[in-house]
Amino acid sequence: MYMNQTNETRLVIGRNAVSELLKTDSPVDKIYIQEGALDGSLKVIAAKAAARKIPLLPCHKQKLSSLSGESVHQGVIAIAAEKEYCTPEDILAIAKKRGEMPFILIADCIADPHNLGALIRNCESAGVHGIIISKRRCAGLTGTVAKTSAGALEHMAVARVSNLAHTVNTLKKKGLWMVGCEIGGKKYTEISYDMPLALIVGSEENGVSHQLLTMCDFVATIPMRGKVNSLNVSSATAVLLYEILRSRDRHSCSL
Image (cartoon, rainbow, N blue to C red):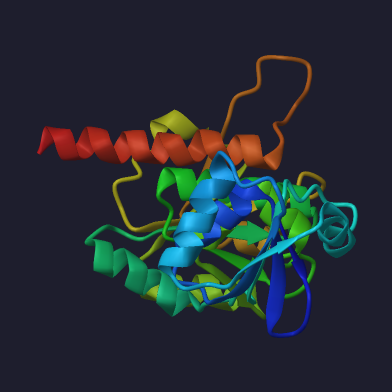
């Protein structure tokens, strides 16, 4: 996971998070590693740090515990540059560079950092080009978000905008279709997703806002068979993300 240290740097805590950090081009100032624990994945981290000429500082376990606070450090903490937000245009550029139709997630009022972290992990696994969140009523890129994403945050473009409705309107003008995830829509398996699109998901308490729903070209609904009438937002999003991939793969195979 990572925690804020200053306005310019952050603490990246734990073996998995540091390993994923070193796979990126993010600047790393130094890495603290526990004395006498240079084995397994820590040995790999040390080798990667040496290859990038990142200072590796052996230290006592107590110092690592002091830096990490309540977080489990697993013998390693990196001091890295703060994770930067991108713009929606940057996300579209990523899709263009990959030669793929835009595939974006818009998270409407996801205030729970655990949910946002899980969404980031799902999106990175499904090849989503980027996530757009609001500056208001949405969790930021906190340590909890990073930890829950299991390192996926290091590889995911995240844009933070002032007005989601304005951003949706701009994306529609650029040719993207909007697919909302909400009850009362069309069964999610009956929609063709072979188009540039943004999937809009909302909080578990309120769902997608009425304003954004009215801007959607399609509303996808996941049928519930049990007594509970909804899935966790990250679970529902995972279902839809992979249905979108399946739909696109099926279309490409038929060409």
